Image 1 (cartoon, rainbow, N blue to C red):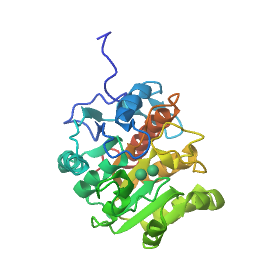
Image 2 (cartoon, rainbow, N blue to C red):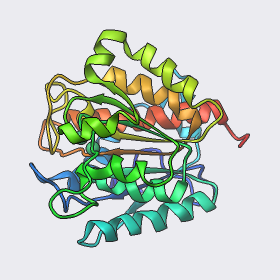
Image 3 (cartoon, protein in one colour):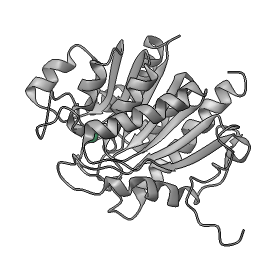
Amino acid sequence: MPFFSHTSFADADSSYEDARYVLFGVPYDGTTSFRAGTRDGPRAIRDVSYNFETYIADIGIDLAGVPMADMGDIEPWCLPEDVVAQVRTAASQLHRDGKVPIMLGGEHSVTVGAVQALKPDAFVVADAHLDLRTEYGNTPFNHACVTRRVAEAGVDEVFIVGARSGTEEEYACARDLHLYSAGDVRSKGIGAVIDDITTAVDGRTVYLSIDADAIDCCLTPGLGTPEPFGITHWDVRDLVRALAPRAIGFDYVEVCPVDAGQTAAVAARIIRDFIASHWKATGTST
Ligand code: MN
Ligand code: MN
């Protein structure tokens, strides 16, 4: 098939039935507050995924041998609560079928539906923003409210890594959660933060959400809400590799491909690392 276009994530060529990992995109940016364009994130991530080797040497996994499928994109409705419901329906089906859902955003609001579907014990999010507002732009499903909605969804523990932006009320709310600011990561090192989190979630299920703006906008500027003084792509990769074995679902959101492609490249590569790390730890045994 010499003219087959790159419409799926690279190497996601298993059937749905055979796949352990199932990717889908949610090209939605309806509540975007600053720079629009995260609806183009899934396409940009898929495009650049073909840049990478199938073999990930330092994990020792060749993705060509890992059963993964890409179902394409959800066609999002207009209202964020409807999109959350669409995601919840899709993620519930994947979870029932024993798949690990991997969602490509789109803005961060989509994460709420996946967490409602998977009901993890713990939620770990990398984000520049606390996302703990009760509502924003006259909707509680705004992308600025994601972690607040998740915290209310029956998740036992919430861990926020890399934050450096929020209101005074949001910081007050964060006192009931586990907050590792970008400054904390810089001073303690990501290894110490990961040790804390992996100890706390031992034996529990985890949902892992990466908001691309956790990474310093000077490194990856393709963002809807860019924030400097962030953590690095190395930090996020370490976090993802460490938590992947415990994850029952994963998303990478808020890629707004208005840059030279570096933000989508980091996203695609970290998604590949998530799959390889999860597969290495769990293989065909679960
Ligand atoms: Mn966010
Ligand atoms: Mn953010």
